[in-house]
Structure formats: C-alpha cells, structure tokens
Amino acid sequence: MPTPLGHTLTGVIIHTIIRKKRKKKQSCQSWMCLLFCIIFSSLPDIDFISLSNSSNGFLLPGVGLSWENHHGPTHSLGFVILTMLVVMVVARIFQKNWKQWGFISGLCVFCHVFMDTLIVKKGLMLFYPLSTHRISLVTGFPFGYSPEMGFVGFVVISAVEEAIILGCILAIVWRIMR
Ligand SMILES: [Zn+2]
Image 1 (spheres, rainbow, N blue to C red):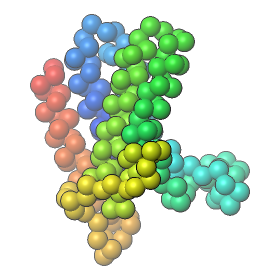
Image 2: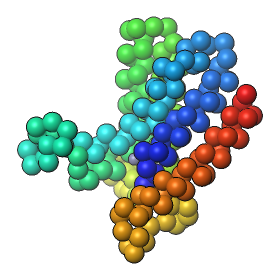
Image 3: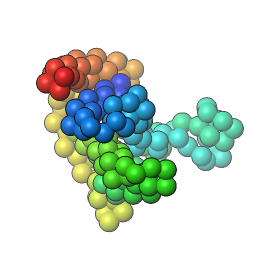
C-alpha cells in the first residue's frame, strides 16, 4: 500500500499542478484547496472504518478500524465517478465552480486507486459495480513486500520510499510550476 504519507504527498503534487494551471481561479490558490486535495487523495481508505458490532471501537463505540473491507468498492473507477457526482452536486449548491471541484476530487481519488493498483497484490475491483474481477499491476518495485520484512518494517520502508520518490516528483513539479 502507499502509506498515508504517499497519498498525502500525491494530494500536494496534484494541488501544485492545478494551482498553476488554474492561476485565475482564486479558489485553487487557497489552503482550503490544498486540504481538499489531501483529503480526497486519501478518501478511498475510508474503507478502513468498520461499523460492525464486532468492531474494536477504536474510534467510537461500535466504530473501529479493520482490514476486513480494505481495498473493496471504494478502490474502483465506480467510486471515482460517484465521488465526482457527489462533489459536483454539493459544490453546485454552495458555489459556481462545481465542475472544477468535481474534476479535482475525481483526479485525486483516481490517483489513489491507480497507485494502489501498482502495489496491492490481490488487485482491486477497478470496474466495480460492473465487475468484481480484481486487477493488479504489481511489479514488485518500488513497494515490494516480502514476509521477512514484517508489517511494521514494510510500512516504514514503504513510507521512506514514498518520501524519496514522491518528494523528488514534488520538488520537480514545484520548480516547473513556480
Ligand atoms: Zn487505498
């Protein structure tokens, strides 16, 4: 998995690009837009939240964190479209730039799904709800997992790799988009 650090950096990269591309749009220049990009770049991992009675209650009574449903329907192109539609409707109620916010939210969620497709061995149901067939583009690099690492070791190594790779991409994009 890309860790939360990887998804956060992806959100920052997306914001850096759209901020430059949409210079005239004041709404893309704000901290709110940056926060929006970071939140939507991590949104598919909302499936970590479990509402079952057997939940560990980590967050609230009856609401906990669980791997059980992770990499399910929220990691699909169907969820990308659903997110865009919901954001467009909500944005339209509150302001004019509904197309822009819909596009940005869709781009952020799509990047999350794409990145996970590269590292989730069991694959993702990309075409859910049309198909539950899992598709994986795992190459083993750069986020390869081996059992000897242990879970914590894997997360730490992944975070370091993401910090280096995505940090370099961010630095390059930042310089180009200045
Ligand atoms: Zn994910």
